Image (cartoon, rainbow, N blue to C red):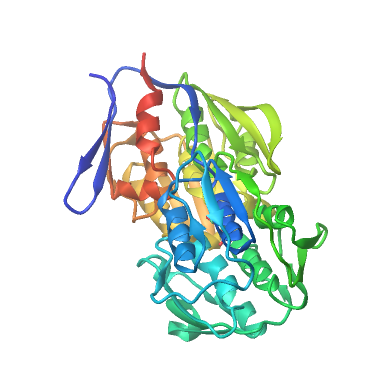
Length: 449
Ligand code: S3P
């Protein structure tokens, strides 16, 4: 019997079944991952508020960027049908978004709602309501509502504006210097976008550096930005007019991370993942896997449209435990679920700390990953701000659940590749948020020896 990877449709959702054969399995081939989710959102949003045309190549066709596109269409931007070849965005111009007649729905996407709030808050005289799915409606918005209110924004919602649905009455905003208590690119980007529409300098200072795609793209679109790397501060000078640009979106390192870990833990594997964005604010996963002694090579390093890109070759090697925390966390924040899988197969005890932010992602990723990996026989202890994972116990297939979290669904599928018997992942359709072809790629690279 060969290993089989099957999707079973149930009336409510999808199950992904990984049925491991006795014959040896390895992962082989050259693959591409979908476009970077963070860059895709920003290309659509900056395109929507710029003057003139923005073209986007390599856009992620996942559900999250679709939420961004539908919100900004409702706000008056012309966005062509989404495809990976070339999406055209005809911008409305700064401060020129129109008041939609209906509620804006950000779906599952924290980046959509938080960045969009920065733009809506500074549209004087217009009223907006924004919401999202059950997960998004339980995630904290006060992290952006608080600084926006300091700028003069009027926002209402449950828990004093912490929870969507939110109502926004657009105002003339004033610039601020905001010292963010968390390293969050969503908070930073929201304030910078609001700062675009104010008179003067708006500064955000973070405790550690978060991803800098907004800074890079705002500059490329013509905004005046100064960055102080010593203090992790960014200043934008408003009011600024943006000009439409061609954007090329590299492959998402957060999606590549699943294959980097899969190739590391499945014996005899040898995979090349082409065209992956390796922006230094995102490469924490490469550093963590290097600490674990993974065999990963960066090939053909180049710069594409203002973002560093490389091909990543990964070959199987026994991983070792490591300790992860501090400033590294914001640089691998979305990769912690799959790192937990890597740790379950590493020799020794891996400790991940300073990662309490994971509790307010699409699911409580610390609780969910600990519980689901333990169902497969792993030894994972949940810490208040992280995970402690003792690797080396062989995993056995079981029924697990994604909790509607895309990164959990895919992480569990990779764990299932190395578990004996059948692993069933319930609510596996969540993967389509960031990786619509995940299962097809998984099927494509599996080789039976
Ligand atoms: C993102 C920032 C991160 C990350 C999210 C995407 C972005 O969130 O987890 O998937 O595109 O700005 P935080 O800013 O909340 O850390």
